[in-house]
Amino acid sequence: MSAPLPPKPSTQPPQHAALTQFPVLDDSLHIGGMALERLAQRVGQTPFYAYDRSSLSARVAALRLHLPPQLQLHYAMKANPMPAVVQLMAGMVDGIDVASHGELKIALDAGMSPERISFAGPGKSAADLSRAIAAGVMLNLESEHEMERAAETGQRLGLRPVVAVRVNPDFELKSSGMKMGGGPKPFGVDAERVPAMLQRCAALGLDWRGLHIYSGSQNLKPEALHEAQSKTLALAQRLAADAPSALQVLNMGGGFGIPYFPGEARLNLEVVGANLRRLLDQARTELPGTEFVIELGRYLVGEAGAYVCRVVERKISRGQVYLVTDGGLHHHLAASGNFGQVIRKNYPVVIGNKVHGGPRETASVVGPLCTPLDLLADNLPLAQAEAGDLVVVLQSGAYGLSASPAGFLGHPAALEVLV
Image 1 (tube, rainbow, N blue to C red):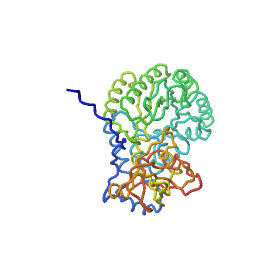
Image 2: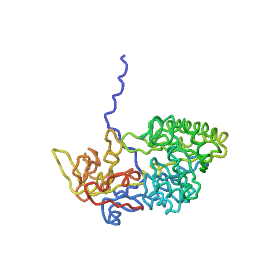
Image 3: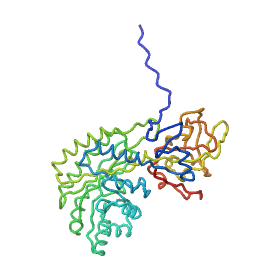
C-alpha cells in the first residue's frame, strides 16, 4: 500500500489579523460609539483621523494587567503627538518621552510633571537643550559633545541639568521592524564608551540619573523581546558597576509591535509580561534601587486609530477597479508603503459603511495626488464601493498624520478627533 500523499500547500493568500477594536453594527464601523457616517458628519469633512478613547484605555489596562507592577509605563509621544491624545495618555501612564521642544511643550501643557518627562533624539538644538533644562526634564544624552553642550547650557542658566545616557548597545532586537541599536548608529553612545562618559558627567557636575537602552521597534515575537530585554539588563548591570553613583532609572526601550500586514499575528502580551517578571525579579539583586521603565508608542496608540476618506469616483481601467478618494499618502504615508516598507504590503482597509454585506470585489484604493505612489490599498478584497462610500484604513493611530508630507501638492489637510 503506497504512503499517503502529503497535503498540498495552501494557495489561499495570508489574511490580516482579526481586528475587533471597533465594533460593526448594521454593517457600519462604529468608532467612539458612533456610526461612521454620523461621525463623518460630526467631524464635518473627510479625510480625518479618529482615535478611540476606549481602545486607548483598554490597551493601557491590558499592559497594567500583564506587565510587572514595578515597571513604569511611558508614552513615546512621537507615535502620535495630537494634544488631546497626549492629554488623555498623560492621565494614564507614568511618564512621557519627547523628541523636540515642540513635543515638550505639548507634554507640559498636558499636565505631565517635568520629573516624569524624558527628552531623547540626536542633534538637539540649543533651544532644545535650554528649554529642557529650564523645564527640569531628563535629557537623554546622545553623544559626548551633547553632554558638554548640556553642561555649558546649565551653567549659563544657573541650573543643574538632569541627564541620562542613551546607550547604543552591542546587540539588536532581532526580527524588529526598525533596528535602533547594534553596530554603527546615529542614536546614543556606543556601549564601550559609556563608562568614560559617566565619569565625565560627574566631573561636569551633571545630575546623572540613568541609562536609556533602546534596541529596536515593531516586534511581534515574545522570544526576540525577551532576548533583547535580558541583554539590556545585563548591559545595564555592567555599566552601573562603573558608574560614579547608583543607577536610579533604566529605560529599557520598547519594541512591542502591532499587526499591520497579512500573515501577522498579535503580540502575546501575557508571555511578554511573564518573561519580564522573571527578568526584573532577578535584576533586583544587582540593581536594588533602580526604577525600570518601558517606553511604548505604537503599541499604545496604533490600533486605536483609523484614517477615514471618502470615495470620489469609482474608476475601471482595463478591467481593474480603482476607488479614487479624497485621501492619500499626503495624510497617511505609512499606508502607501513609503514609510519604511521594502516590499509594499497592504494595511487592513475596509469600506466602513459596508464592512461585511453586499457584493465583494478586488479593488485598489488611490488618492487624488498626481503620482503612482498615492496608493492606500493594492488589489485588496473589499465590498463593492461607489462614490460617497467611506474607506477606512485601520491600525492608523501611530505614525499617521504627523509622519506624512501634508503639504505635498497643496491638497487640504486632514482633521484629527479623539472620540
